[in-house]
Image (cartoon, rainbow, N blue to C red; front, side):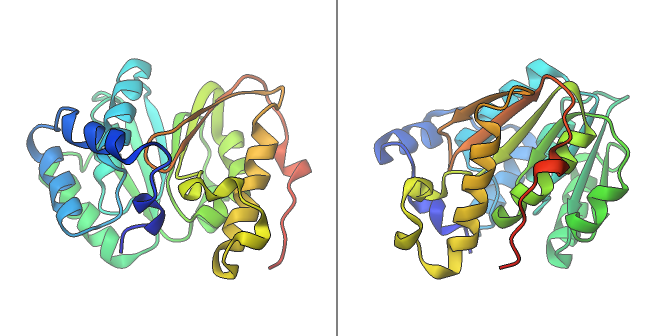
Length: 235
């Protein structure tokens, strides 16, 4: 089932509809994968976010890209379009059904040699990666963003960009924790910890974009050991 927060847009519903229906559709097989996911409510980035990501990455032209959260391979394929024949996308996922579909889509689009799918939990895989990466796109378990963030900063090159999807939780990120259902309070706390950490950190250049359920965009200006200030709660 698609993330319920995607039914609570952080901008006017009419504007969301305008963007999703008005922005140009993707051509060819990438468009087919997007349509397939939307028809079956498979959780991929919404169209307005995908178009924005496509535009930004097209300008950045990264060579080494890391993605955390593959789903059926739509965003990894979008990213792979911009790395060139000498670039590479590494993506991580732990769900067998998604991995199977993603691999089929990579083959369908001819990206088998341009994308490596690492199977397993990102918490186990991230510490084993070497980097550096020019761009990292994180769209995985929201409760893990804060925990994964120091690894992303460690793997990202100076001047590289980290883009994190779904950080607004349908706007509830601003609510008092007592108003948040207990089942999602951990996500609420972790996302607020992340935002508090990155919004004005001197080693980072940070921006928020109200597309989809919110994009957090971070440029690594200086090296900093974020592991040293990480606050991980047990529950």
